[in-house]
Image (tube, rainbow, N blue to C red; front, top):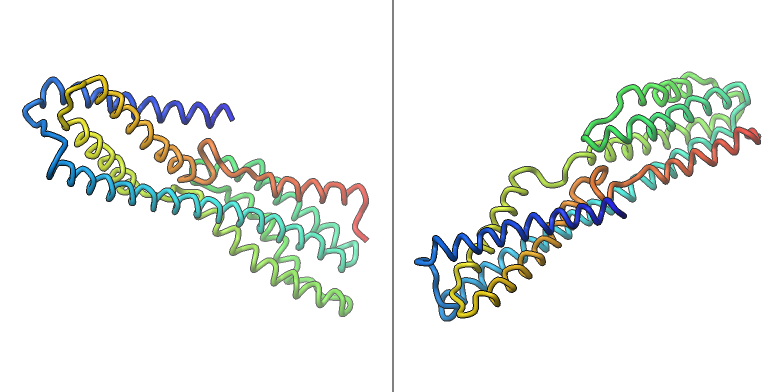
Length: 259
């Protein structure tokens, strides 16, 4: 919570500081550009505000939907891993126990090693080794009965599904918006606030309050975009809680072995 509040205050302070600086610069050095807030200037102000507002709204909703989708992918990943683990019950103890250890070791590495790396858009190649060994073991296993044959086929299908979920999680560790989009949004906000600063008003104090409130409003939207732009870093970073809970259930099973 403190991280979210700190980030929000930082974004607010940055936007407010830039806007107030821009306001005083236009008042002191760009007074010859000022125009009355009526007629065509008012129409253009409305047009710029509408265009920029729609762009902000579209991008804000897109980043939120992407964030929620990735959060859902992580939950599905935990569910799929748990189903894979539970399906090992169909195998004999010799194969079941060794496979369960590989799957548990892999999951621990994802939580402890890979997850912190994803905040920088990276992932741990080493964590994949245990899961690959788990898959190879299933491929090379000769079923002892029909139950194991059916379980083996189901496990291979689940592994295929899991690979797709893992790949989607890894590729989503990067920023949803590229640098050009962020630059465009920043320049759009700058132009919009500058245009509002150039309006002539008889009361400078009232104009200053209006610019400040406009800056705060835009900064709140930017805060939302920045918060959900990188799903695995930032104040609202997706945690491996779902996978951690799945692992906790497996550790209970290790006390009461699978049957």
